[in-house]
Length: 286
Length: 163
Ligand SMILES: Cc1cc2nc3c(=O)[nH]c(=O)nc-3n(C[C@H](O)[C@H](O)[C@H](O)COP(=O)(O)OP(=O)(O)OC[C@H]3O[C@@H](n4cnc5c(N)ncnc54)[C@H](O)[C@@H]3O)c2cc1C
Ligand code: FES
Ligand code: FES
Image (tube, rainbow over all chains, first blue to last red; front, side, top):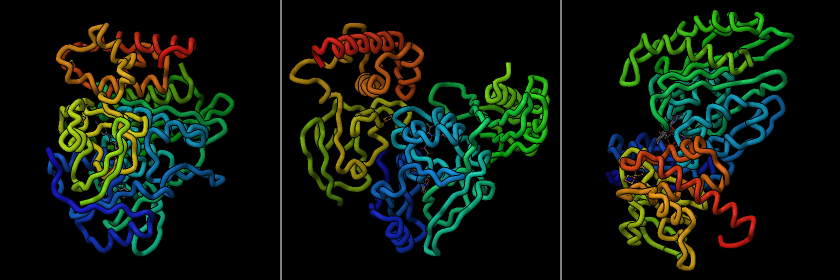
């Protein structure tokens, strides 16, 4: 279908975008890659008054090194995230998960910031942001503020961003020496959303698992940080028994949906299986 | 209305468009370039795939205003000097199509795939074309066509002949 009638603005700075958004009021919508928003408009599921296109703001694109962290611009496209040397080196989990998002065409348009702001529980990147303790840097009429990933995702398609705020960049603490990562995604067809996904990063040291980070996709209305799994790994021998035992904690604190992709109890089972696989791959076990 | 300028298959185009106009509709309805079909409302099927500054995108999910300043290649701009692109020839030779509805998108997605990976395995072709659905062929001959074109393109690149 044809999207509804809408006004359009393409500011070339964040400050201008913020003031256009403030002027336009609640019905304005930020347009990033459009890979979630344009299907929504074509299906006439939303009627925004104006689209504020961030595509002309060069400063929102790219990745930079900030010492202990890397900073990924909100408008950095999925395809650029996957290929970025800083991301591959310091946030391998993000590169791995992004490579499973959608298909090449969608990855050429869709953005990291858009995927986080959209906050789809089946989206692969919110779980990564939570597992990596990312921080969201947002700018609105009141200036800039930083929101930890653990406080960013509020509910189904709902974030802590105010309607007038723009997600400008995402700070991701580096996981370097000794860390390795894997994103395990289960979906029924190609180019599909995760029924369940598991984001895992592990630091091995002298045959033990010194630290672990685990985030779950589509196990609740928001991404789940699997703290029980992490605790069950820390300080234990890096072997199959440790991983299998830890994976049994994957469902703790989760509240999986029941939908066409699967029932809640099936998802809980899947979470333990996929957690075991993700950890085994990440920790190079078996 | 918003002024847009873009190159489409090597021709400069300037127009005033409604912001809501999709690139696919701009190409088809305003420029008459109907070689780019539309197959869905959900950004899934890939039939509408074109190259935007050399990269594959789904033209049903890009606004014409977002393509301002870009260079677009559709299936109608792929052949050079009257000679088919190796992928067009390979789809013809290997029965890579039946009804043909998915073919423009398949071929442009394959152009992008071979740009990134000139020698893909069967598995890599299947994953590389996961954004394109075909309801007729069962994909076997599509994969065969892409492999044949890839081989021809690698050979002509090393011998310096052809495109
Ligand atoms: C066929 C298909 C399959 C897909 N499969 C997957 C998948 O398997 N896994 C997955 O994770 N994703 C998948 N996606 C979604 C994809 O990752 C999108 O890129 C992403 O959800 C939205 O990013 P975008 O840049 O296109 O945002 P848009 O569509 O432009 O915007 C999405 C929403 O976020 C808001 N927004 C965007 N950017 C900002 C910002 N910087 N600040 C404030 N608000 C903002 C917009 O206002 C809008 O509400 C799929 C999409 C399609 C079409
Ligand atoms: S028409 Fe189906 S993806 Fe564009
Ligand atoms: S040939 Fe008919 S859809 Fe592919």
